[in-house]
Length: 82
Image (cartoon, rainbow, N blue to C red):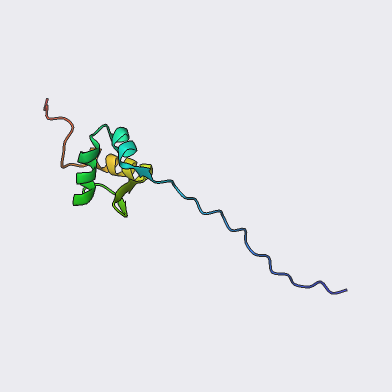
């Protein structure tokens, strides 16, 4: 008896898709006005995706962006020197 060589396909991981959130929800997360957020998106100051005439955001991208802004030397958090 000969065993047939069968190629096993590796299990494909299901693609993870993070849902997009709208301007109102994203602005609420960041505690800023919706129009301010949309203006920042238009200027390219914040990660955003324009779908048709609407701005959409990923919460993870906003979190990463916020962390880089907080850790940036451009805007120091403390001005007191001891």
